Image (cartoon, rainbow, N blue to C red):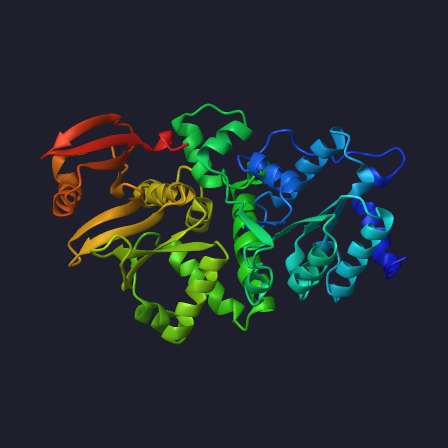
Length: 428
């Protein structure tokens, strides 16, 4: 017998693992799966390294785990070899001993056999990385899958101590194609508008009222991260951090000056830089820099900031789908949507600006070179609207570019540059 487990933790462990009962009970979860499901399942079942799944609150991490457990259950994997535990269920305790007791209990119950341990919201456990490293090195029959907020590795030495032992996956808010598929909807302009407003988080679709959706995103996701999660891991002032987050979400895609942000909030420029870095590491925002002459050079003084969630932009600033402000700022909303779509491709992303006059929204760095992209979500696009895009292409000797449009779907040649017009609704 290994180290005994605390009785209250053992009771909670049994409650969270109904498939250990007689007769065993499979978890009840949605049958429709996120795009990341297959890759995550392959990592869990066919890789020995620790699998980590990180992402924003309420983005669907736990549901993915339960879907995989359900498939394992129906594939006749021994239920006693599957352990799930959410550390969010044990608030306000020193959870290091609880984690050790849970792992020891599984080893003792499933001695010398393969065990799959799903450890949810592990960021609540102090020194979780050191504990997992110990068991990973000593017990090769244990397969660990961990989840946590995007702040999982902040304030710890996890990356260093688990180097060569862990593979990381990021679960982003749902893309437009996922939203349509998971909710069995057709690709229409109406459903596109609904996606921009509330389609990124699985539960938002179920909330009938705009005010409830607004509270869910602003209070239970954004505010929880910056005022609860991050202050536990770093010495930060959650109120200032939340103020900064609200400011950058309210003006997506605009050039940000660190000095001005510091004056507006009343904190130092170095603190602003640190806070922006933390918000980026927690997958709340993305910072884009002005691309330089080289493929991957940048100007650190010039940056644009976007929210990782277009829903947060809409629900923060607007009062409904028919709001006049919504219609006025539709271009910025779609620009944020395009930014998030491009981030999902995994390619490096910049913008380009010259002397505050000429600008291209996005420069995507592909294996074959730079690919400029402009967002023109308007009823009519005139040749003058594309002057900066054509100028940049000719300056950089590029032959192709793209314009994201409201309706137009065509290919045109402008001064020797092939420009692909693609409706935003095709970014699935």
